[in-house]
Structure formats: C-alpha cells, structure tokens
Image (cartoon, rainbow, N blue to C red; front, top):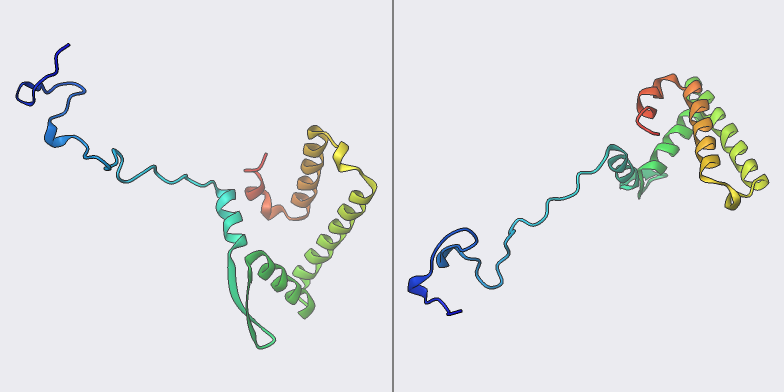
Length: 141
C-alpha cells in the first residue's frame, strides 16, 4: 500500500476532512458521560443523610435530616400531641420487638427468602398501622 498525500486525501465515511478531525488531546465527547439518573429511593436516602443546621439549647448544630426528624417527632410527643404520641409508642414497641428478635435469632443463618418474608411482614404491619403510607410503600418490592 502506498501512503496518500494530503492533496489526494479522499473525504468519505470514516474519513473526515483534516480541518474537522479531533485535535491531539481533545476529547471526542467534550461534555462527558451524562450523570446517572437517580431513583426516588436514592434521592430520598441522599436527602435524609444531608446535614442541616438546627438550634438546640442555644447552640447551632449541623446534624443529619433523619436525626432532625426523630428529634422533632419526640419533641411533639413529649409536648402532648396525641397522634404523634400514639405513633411513637407503636414505633417503640416495634423497635423493642425487633431488638428482642435480633437477640433470639441468628441472622447469619437467615436465607434470602426468610429475610424477604420478614421484611414483607414488617411492611404489612406498618401499613396496617398507617394506611396513608400505602402509596409510598407500593413502590418497594
């Protein structure tokens, strides 16, 4: 094969004109790969882990959103909000049941099917207690 001279260079499929070729060091995709589209659960988890400023006992603190929510729920329950108080008592009851089950049960020996069944049972009990959460929980398996 003979090398082509620049004057005889034919332009065609896979052979762009010299002026339009990528320069050395220049990317063929200058904007880069598009960012991953996050799911609703990933967005929610990211937002729950974000730190927020609050004022507690005259001091300004930066704590995670999930901790802020727990503090607010407990504060409302202590102040006497009946709905929040009953919800908190039910959550405490469920947490104690889960903690006692952890002590009694060896989770290392639990199969995937058993873990899924335990999750479904817990989800169904929570949905029975709080019917307004049904629309949110339907997106989970």
